[in-house]
Length: 68
Image (cartoon, rainbow, N blue to C red; front, side, top):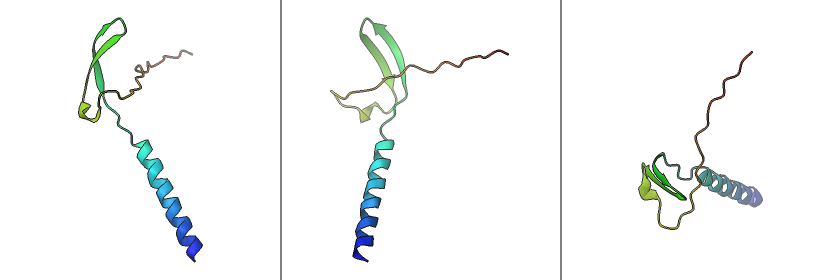
């Protein structure tokens, strides 16, 4: 009985911690200007960021048109 409670508690903690990682901050931004290696963006909910945060930026996906 005691082992079942411990196993359930550990499984719950693991599930909640992995769910928290999945809900990392996702911001929607628009690029205002590009000057060499400097990019200026305007983001919604930018208050979630702080100086020194590493941010992953991926370009928008382009739709491909396939022919027959």
